[in-house]
Image 1 (cartoon, rainbow, N blue to C red):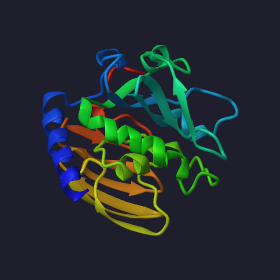
Image 2 (image 1 turned 180 degrees about the horizontal axis):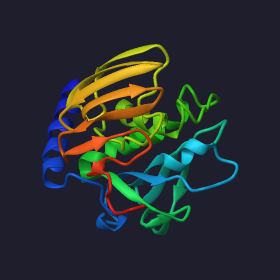
Image 3 (image 1 turned 120 degrees about the vertical axis):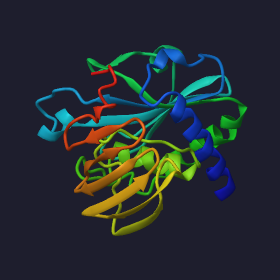
Image 4 (image 1 turned 90 degrees about the vertical axis):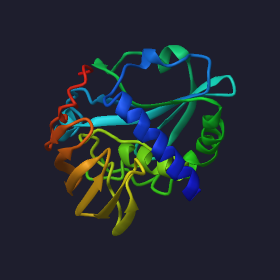
Amino acid sequence: MAKQKLLLGMLFVAQSLLSGCAIRPSTAAADKPTIMVKSVRLPARSWLPWFTRFAEHTWIDFYHAGTWHRAEWNNVDHIIMFETSATAAFADVRWEREVAVHEQFSGEWTVPIMAKILEIATDYEYAKHYLPWPGPNSNTFVNWLTSEVGLPIVMPPTAIGKDYTTWLHAGITASNTGIELETMLLGAEVGFREGVEAHVLGLTLGVGFWPPAIKLPFLPAIPGGWFGPK
């Protein structure tokens, strides 16, 4: 597993050098093994907490064995793992907001990873303990799931909950290109893709290396995070 993570991390660095920012769903193939890690800025709703208007919600769409699937946690008591359609997977808009694809992986090497996602996603230990802020929430789930299957990712800094942990966690970053130390209240990470980040109650403050960016609480990364989708 460690060797696989290292190889995937190197692949991810090469991909990052070529792309560097979020893309649109329409760039993926509709009938090939594909994994897309996505986000959308939460909509303005009177029943949502005030801070959600500045936050991103993440999920995973993937095409496995002839079927599109979605792995997503957006309820207070269960993980949603369900079959979806190519139309939904390639939709550019959700909740009146434009969708961004932060990571996109294709090829036969993704097949066992997708099988693992289907196997373990519903076993998430916090499935009955959802908290919008600081977590665990939908972003915590995606960060956990991709780590468990060895898929390197970088989530947007406004994905509140992405760095949540209960007491203490030390290890490699989600992109497999750096190191992190996290507690329930405070944390920090340094990585090629993450840059330098400080975390306070789920909020991110930092500087990105690639693409170059300033990361401030409640704002997309500047300028790299202003990726078109709003």
